[in-house]
Image (cartoon, rainbow, N blue to C red):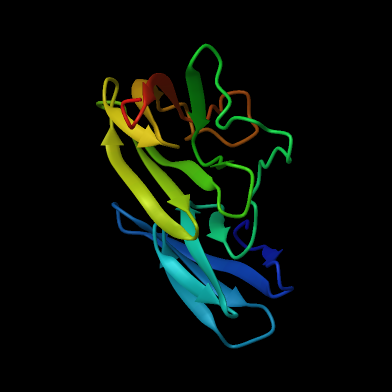
Length: 188
């Protein structure tokens, strides 16, 4: 849901992202019902109940909020024919800052890079499933290992990008985290 905009939840409830703030370590978003008095102040990783539906706040940034759960399959679902998730290229999986990667199906995993920082290059990665936070990896750096989708991944690289340039301008480049598949997390 974009800041200043509205989004329709699966049950038809219309929600708006009306305001945001940051204290240097976390970002808060103000969500409000369009046709009602209810409002919520949320941060990434929070759980929130809106109109009887449970959501995880997968991401809060200056221009958008991403909610996971509530019966949604999530952005980026690739349909019923997908046999393996995530798709990789030579064992590498690229995650882009603020772009959710969602496993197909209502109970699938959602993965999002919430923050990318420099000096040294590091990132925060949130993993949610079944409307709950499964893992939150703070300040991962090149060489660190994370577990996502029952697999172990090595952080191959973290690139901060140039998000201080206006989005859509030639100088804008979103941050990225590249993961290299190490193998199953269970040791199989």
